[in-house]
Amino acid sequence: MNEKIKGEARRKIILDGYVNNEPLKDIAAKLGCSLASLKVSASKLGCTRTPKEAAEFRRGFHIPENKRQDYYQLMTAGQYRSRECAQILGLLITQPPAME
Image (cartoon, rainbow, N blue to C red):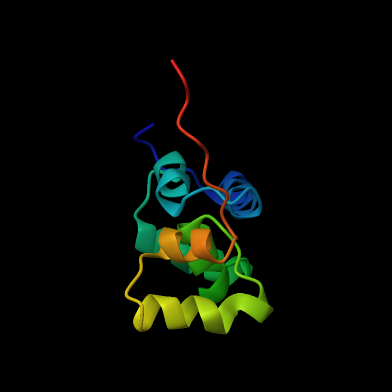
């Protein structure tokens, strides 16, 4: 899909991609454009993600407000990784290894 998509089809792909929480690289690949071009188009359409939403998307989990301070304390003082902090706070459930 090397050709660029223009007009209404482009707007629909961008809006659908943001609504479905698709990675920006995937949306840009569908459109045949760069990430910067995609972000500018999304900004003009008013469908960009807030920094908080973007961070949650990258992490893969949501941090409730009542545990946010504890999470950042573990990240900075405890020097744990994001997933480790989530497991400690009970935000992520660890799956036991599958028995073979």
